[in-house]
Image (cartoon, rainbow, N blue to C red; front, side, top):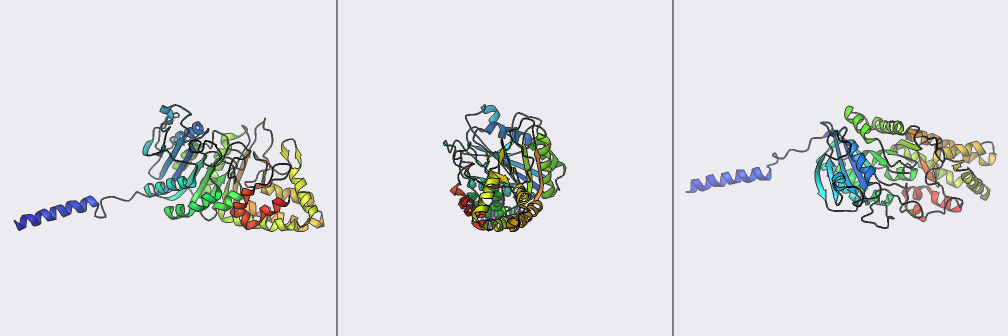
Length: 420
């Protein structure tokens, strides 16, 4: 009787240890070369475009060396249920190769009840999920949605902002702010065990020094546009195909590939800009801007700068402008100052500092390209990869939300702008 009891005890113990894993029965996910984390915050009027972007990823699909995963949120009032698949709620997908160019045929790994994908917390949750289930040596986070540079709400501008969610915010005014992003970045870095290799912003106007500076401690390379991004977005089919064809590609070369493929996709069609920015070198740009502001130490210098910023011929301003006219190219600003005041001894210190700014931008921007169409209302030919907020009374009033940015705190640029 005792022998039978002991045998039964041993047998049950073995079964129990097997059930709980015994540390061996559930293998860890295989670490691949790259994981692409595609965050499609499409619960807005871009949902059909973002849906197409996710479908495009299927042209390559995940491989033995590359994970492609996506989180999707669509605006349920747009599109047919058989094409948008998850009209209500959020889907997390493992993207697989498919010949379909109209349907999302990949594996729906997980469904999440309707959430506000226009929050930094939602982005963090997706990245942590992706890192745990699909680990890799390198990570690219793609944010695709509306975008508005550093701005925290739509204000009087057209409705836009990174990760806009109409269902959760019917006013269409709430965006993910840069301070909100900063709050979740340490958790993201901890989950990945490293910086995000590439943060690709498939959204408008995020190629700003203010945007770049906010992410510098948690992202290696930013890929973003100074100008608006077409509704048809980045060419994700060719980008994904290029990655799976060369999975050991470095982050620098992948970022450059994205810029080149974007340029090819829109050559001679409409105005676009895109740049790859090395965030390890962004502090040099920011420090030079910090040192520039105090050099405008007289009313006459302030007035001269304000007049330079406001000088325009039709829709083209003397300093390169973008869809938001208060966003101006930094390199071009410095170059125009040198051109206009280079021979005036009163401006010698300003001119010298602008030369430093140009050099710093050239060092930080790995690659910058633009395209132009024949019917564009203004040119972006003087784009060099990074823009800067410069409002004046002629364009729009100073936005006090600007005070909340790391860039503004460090440089005092907001205080300088308020003098104008």
